[in-house]
Amino acid sequence: MSIRLPRGTQDILPGEIEKWHLIEEKARELCAKFQYREIRTPIFEHTELFLRSVGDTTDIVQKEMYTFEDRGERSLTLRPEGTAAVVRSFVEHKMFGDANQPVKLYYMGPMFRYERPQAGRYRQFVQFGVEAIGSADPAIDAEVIAVAMSLYQSLGLKKLKLVINSLGDKESRAAHRDALINHFKPRIGEFCNDCQNRLEKNPMRILDCKQDRDHKLMATAPSIIDYLNEDSKHYFEKVQQYLRDLNIAFEVDSNLVRGLDYYNHTAFEIMSDAEGFGAITTLCGGGRYNGLTEEIGGPEAPGIGFAMSIERFIAALEAEKVELPIDKAIDCYLVSLGEEAKDYTVGLLHKLRLAGFSAERDYLDRKIKAQFKAADRAKAKYVAVLGEDELKANKINLKSMDTGEQTEFDLETFVEKFAELL
Image (cartoon, rainbow, N blue to C red; front, side, top):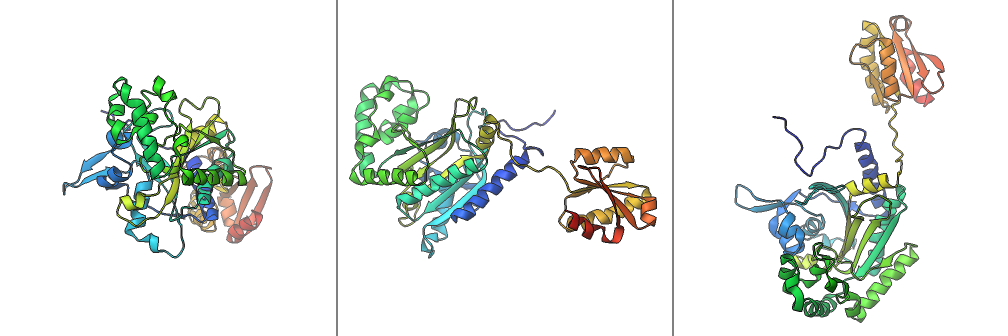
């Protein structure tokens, strides 16, 4: 019996993982410029955290969480998203007391959702996300969106579409909620069981239903934009103004509803318009979550953030045929001829690596021609050849694989001379 990958997971192999490294490196560089600091939280949390923050009417909580009991009969859940855990840590470690506010954090790591695997979507997937907690300034909303857009653009994506909406404050949402109930209630029996259950609990979630999205009532449903009070309207107008100031193009979509209950005010998604990307075009989503810190036991601390899938980031790069600047070449490959020369290269190889160079040698006792082929496959910039005669003369021959030029060096000073050459 052969053991294979669990459904909905993937192995990321050498040759592919370099793309991940580059994206992760770019994300960290960008966060340093925007003054976001990394936070790492556990892969599993108490289930109650997600029930209270994500919302018990969401698909994630109802259908997609990996939940189990430990030996102490405590209910634990593999994290399905990153925001709840970051906010829990913010509250638990009293970051609201830090002198520097808002607290600006980023995270990167695996998330888990039991959903139907499809192109670019896995049951274990990796998210990069940022959270800015402690400010109700609409300028920080624009900044968070700018972080996401800047990361995509820094690696060459061009066919992007930013869509924004306002979900309003509590007062606005309450008025919109009543309007939605009145709109759907007379014909709610025509909708799926999930929508029927959500009518009284959270009718806005009906707008996000994939099963009933083509129902006639969806197209005529009351828009949240029409129910925004003056404060919410002003807030949304300021967000749009700041995005224009940042030269970030956007569209307003009053039907945009994020899939998590904790969102209010600004909500946004970044989509790929690349041809052939697929039916599901969303790359990144986020929004404001004022009230979430209080929901999990902390003081008032308004926040905003986003999360993006690295898998879908890579799929978008492939759809736009973006070649990432990944240098797969090594600096030096050591070719040896004879037992003593082969033994000597063990120490020489280590010296090259300690000096900061990527270097390799043969470990299969191959002939000199096969060693050169191995150097070529490794895309070595230089090949250093050491035979018995060179070893006796305390010399080593260095060949440029680009020009074919060969130079002889003293063995004792070879590493220093190689450093000068590069």
